[in-house]
Image (cartoon, rainbow, N blue to C red):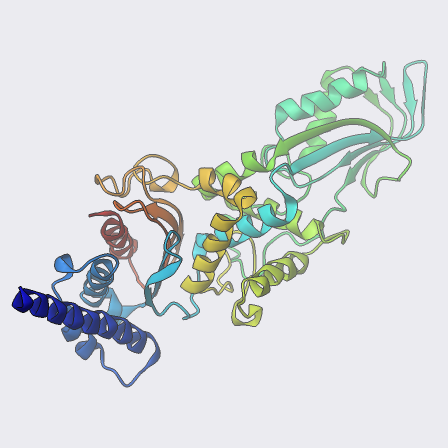
Length: 421
């Protein structure tokens, strides 16, 4: 019996040394240039990963995947995996290397905005008027107050017209005023390519287009309302009468922004964040300052990153896998944020930008993550569950891969290893 116990204790001691060596090897891989890639590869290949307990088996498998990938020699990769249940890091590789995040920037925007604005926040477009109404004639001005709502559509516009008709007005003897004072006049984001299919950064949109006033006039004329004035831009006076508000919830915006990676919706949320600073007109810098404030709250240095826009379209954005994981951790631990973020994330094999990916038994309907794709950039960040009922968050950023498919295949393979027994 003593012999068996001695052998068992020796095995435990040897395993502890192997596990410690695994952690030290990974830290050396990330932080020390003096350790060669070939040496680290040899150390991990020699470990029987399937015989190791959780989470060392996962660590070993991920090392084998990454170090055997041809992408390692041709592009930059940053990866971090965190066990939210055990409150510990499972895996890290180049997690502090600054890389372009592409549309995983939307995660940073969404988490900051939900945290700042709250889950009950409404995107609002308003109709106001000044003057008086006599004999069906409004002698005064009508104001369309833009709130950068990307969901404002023809039904909402018809509601505006019905609002005027409800006053008994058949003639407007005054100006139609487009109030775009919510934000500045920047039409494009910082670092956007001029020849991309860029969204229009106007606070007064209808069906995604910047022709609000033209459509409004057309609807008024069709309703038999005569307009005896000009169309101008201006600020709504504080004593203007409230006629009608059309709103959409932050959840409605998040679902399309995250599931479909809609850039207009992301920029709209980015500027709602900016407007919450109290500045009018607000600027992108106002939103950046609030993101930096949250980054500082997470214990990271905001000057280590660049937040150019809210959607990830800009090539000036720079983030790290560590930052994205810290954001995901923060969201998970704040129920008011997680409640609105988690349902908006694409579901592997089911919907959104992950509908046709990761359909295997381990990841399908399990991985929920935001994708990111630009020329030479592929990224993925989100949550998944393990067979031992642990919840993980992860971030994978690849820069420099000329083709999307190898980088996405690596992401999918990593997620499969996280989810399989």
